[in-house]
Length: 109
Image (spheres, rainbow, N blue to C red):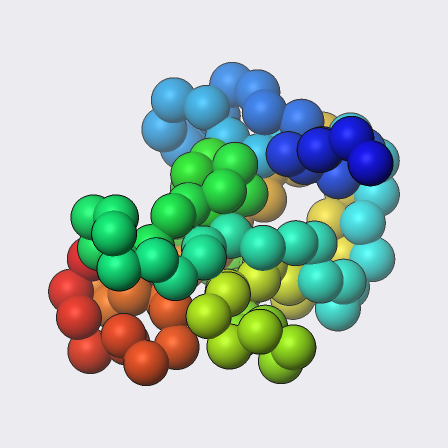
């Protein structure tokens, strides 16, 4: 199996928010779990490894995605769409000052 850092319907591109961001290359329905953003690992800064999804998602006070706990592996955090995202639209989340990894939510990032 080949590793694919992003689903085929996402690309990393210029952001109107900050630097580079996640850009939809096709329409994405509401309620879709896109993939893992953070993996708990105490050997890394902030006790987690960010995947390309976690590393390139930009903040918005009006986000179109949210971080959710992975029900199958509580050490992972996933990205889920809050609404339909149109092709060429940037994916965004509302950042908090807390680590999204379960069990470490009280630790400042």
